[in-house]
Length: 339
Image (cartoon, helix red, strand yellow):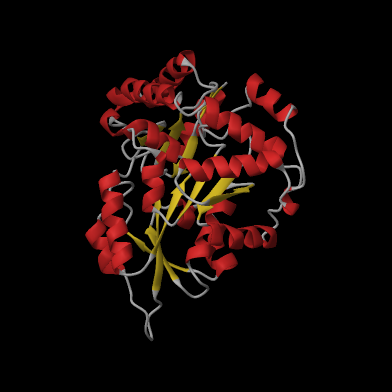
């Protein structure tokens, strides 16, 4: 079976399992798990921030960060296809009392002027804008990378209006490898970031919230309130640290295989390989004889798992458990189904 549904389906490597088995642990709720503390300090340094907080999931990390930068009743601006809007089950509203307003779905191709025009100042009766969230890389944007220059322009807008800027950086490691931008350069743009260890990097669990020391102290309280306080979580943190030490630069291999996958499917007219920058390949099935759920079901019967994201949009994600033979099989199966 070739599993291309997500890069979250990876299994820990032997080295990662060894790191988990030998991790020194404590009680993280009391702040005395040395492996968790070391991971948090390491990730904070990578992004040039003061502190970080280990959380069980990317959704929790995002929602903690959004509550740090947007007060209840405040407004968050984000893309209509953003993960924090589309795939987190209304958590910003339910958990944080946050009002969201979105710009038209553009993936990683942000129109900074359009976003600036959306900002609402404080004052009755409109809901004041408090923060802007962007996604790096962009999931429904096919793994697209927001250029650093665009992020600097967005930072200028945020500063001009005294807004916070949050990065849903679940796959920011892929952007770092694809564009060669230092992680600290990304960190310098944002007030808060969420970064994931289980998407692409191969860890079984875990994300981190990154920000100032004061914000992360508040984040610890919010995490506990949300049920995210873990005890001997150094076992999980050890997997994340192993992933950071061994699996970041190898993402270039996933990017190359994703491009090879796109090249193989390009003759079918369902993907433009030039748009494949990282490890995600989106198939546009608007003119295909099968829709996304039908294609996913038929491919699964032939040993290839893919994700139906929208009725006519399928997603294929390359990761460390997919080799060249897996790419060849996926191309063969999907070509047979779509020809």
